[in-house]
Image (tube, rainbow, N blue to C red):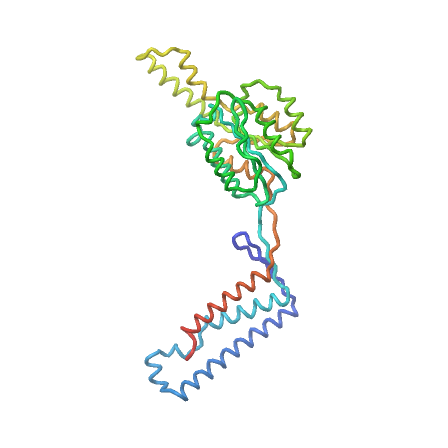
Amino acid sequence: MNINLFGLRIFVNVPYRSLALLILLNALVVVSYYFMMKIRQQRVIKFGNFETLKRIEGADRFSMSPWLLIFEMMIITLLFLVATNSIKMNITKPVSNTDFVLAIDTSPSMLTPDYNPNRLEMAKRISISWLNQLPESTRVGIVTFSNNATRVLDPTSNYWSVKRSLENISKTEIGGGTSLGDALLKSASMLKYSNKQRVIVLITDGQNNENENLSSVINALNSKKIMVYSIGIGDNKKTKELYEKFQERMKEFMKSSNISINQTDKTLANLQELNATNLEFISNKTGGKLFIVRNETSMNLAFSNIFLSNQRINLDSDYYILLFLAFLMIIELLMFAKYGAI
């Protein structure tokens, strides 16, 4: 028999010969409980005014409590299962044999509000949510990049530090361009001492304004056996709509102001569509994968598919069952104080 309870799977397998013994033990519990209640009732009748006690306490006070009997049978059954090694438990947990560096784009285009409130803030929010799914032994580092790359945090399993570092990435760090190659090389240097699988999670809209030779960067990554999982962030449909709205408003504003067309184009330059070509090239050549995210749900799904899988971990069933038995016995004593026979 299998029981699923909030991710916990309980396997109960009682051999037929043992099952007969379990039934016999529970039958003896019922009989013993019945005789115990009878003996206690006779003692009350013998040493007290039974009719007066019935009027004060009520007739139910002298009858067998079904809850107490149920607790006794549960305790006997669980003890039997532990003694005969008939119960096993396991739980599903994410596992990973990988160290990561999150390379997060902080270029002006990441402030495009095609997500709420913008691409950068959503990337930070989902990254923090992803950390909560990681096994404790996984190390995560952070790099931010625009026209150059900045080492924010070396790989660590201190997730509090990782979360704080992610939260502290602000608009003040926004740079002028986007240098994918610099970001990848900086991230790779932070993974050189890892003895696990090494993965860079590249979160960007794919723009590469610095014109590096990405082929030479990829050769360097492959020589170090580092894979790149790219998360392309940007909703091109929404970006186009935003671009058109800004254009209309700027044209209206220009009619009543002395702003040149070149200044208008500079304002609109920060609204850039997702460029998946570079990201696909990088991921494919390094053995990674490209995820295009259109909304928060798809970004969550992309993160959950990056070198994480669910594996069932066996638990020490005897330990947890004996703790549960101790809890049941404490409850039984409290219930007996209220519902036990006089």
